[in-house]
Length: 125
Image (cartoon, rainbow, N blue to C red; front, side, top):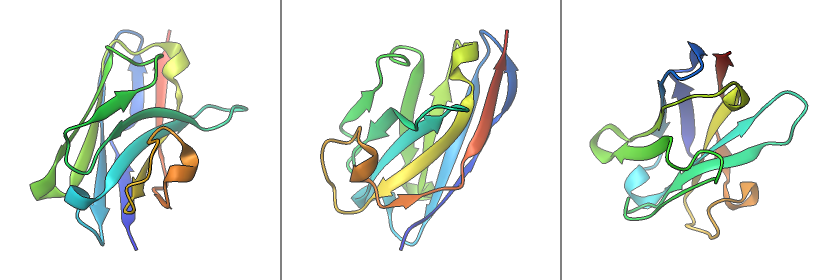
């Protein structure tokens, strides 16, 4: 079992920044792929970013490439999502997810077994 707790969401103006955190317990993130997904009202949950168990591989959705950065600190068992140049269309509930079995591709919801409760990000125009 892996437990995930997201934090860091909030209300920010367009062009601003937020850093989301995903604190994991029950398994070391050094042996777990972690992904970030988001879901806006009335829309399906979509991939945002992912980082491999080693940290050596990251991937991003086209819509956030160049603005968001995923990283992790193994000693804290925490994964971060730095979000810069935020846009109103980034407004969503953001979820982190864990895959201990190291499946691919990492941009699919079905590649992840464990999910956090989500944190709301609202970007005002």
